[in-house]
Length: 77
Length: 311
Image (cartoon, rainbow over all chains, first blue to last red; front, side, top):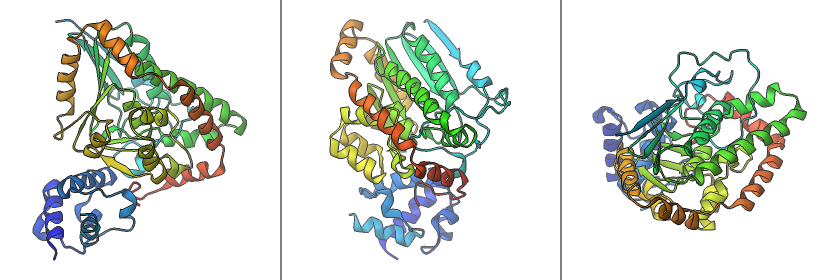
């Protein structure tokens, strides 16, 4: 598992009070975290600020798993 | 200490559009800046009775605070428009040198126009009434936005969370914007086959380069507070939950200056782009008549997807 995925899941767990140990990199983060669209936007802003990247919304088309999200972040760094 | 407060009880008593759902799910939220046609005559005008007021304002020590409080995210439909009209009618008479506009709704500043009300208006009104009703709404919301834009006091928007479409356009009437790290700005109108219609394009062009406006509009992307500050239309970025306190301190500082000097500086630096505002309205009216808009609204209203902004 990449460093980005690990940091991403830790951040998401902290932000949404989930048990980090139970998060799986291949899980659908919407379902796993139980978040809605507004919370997803909050997560997106936090990720952009944490990793110092810009992730336009359309780049997240079809992105559902922590792994896929981490790949998008890495391509922007 | 002088204090004067007003709770918009009349707005609180107004009915909500029949199709509007209240709640935090994606399907209950409007986004973007479509212009609500006046909603259907539902016979349920007392539907909001007993609900908290959608807006209130209070003036203390020459600082007025306008609080948006309409769940789920301060969607701008007929009743929000009426409440804003009542505020701007009073605002010039208030003993205030500065104004803070903030939202106490958790999800953000404002998600923009009430798309459910707009769709309900299309479904229930005869076709020949669509354009006149739309023009009437646009004229009224433009009058409100212009009045806010030119208030003879320093205006400060405190933004958190969602600030999209019409909500973004409302924020852009402010002289200064403070955004916390959760704030996110965007114009998703093109997803509906529209452009912003509450004056957003001219007002954003007044603050930033044309290429930035094109990037936001033509891709529908949203940007965070730090990017907004880098681009220049946000003055300060603060920690989550701190925007209101910071805006209050900015207002207290602005209120110390000579009123004439402050109002003159504002009018000199921030003229109304009248001609462009008028043209934006005409483009909006024309686009609104395209069938794809009704279809996009139908998809939005009927969508059960929890991720409309992250398709």
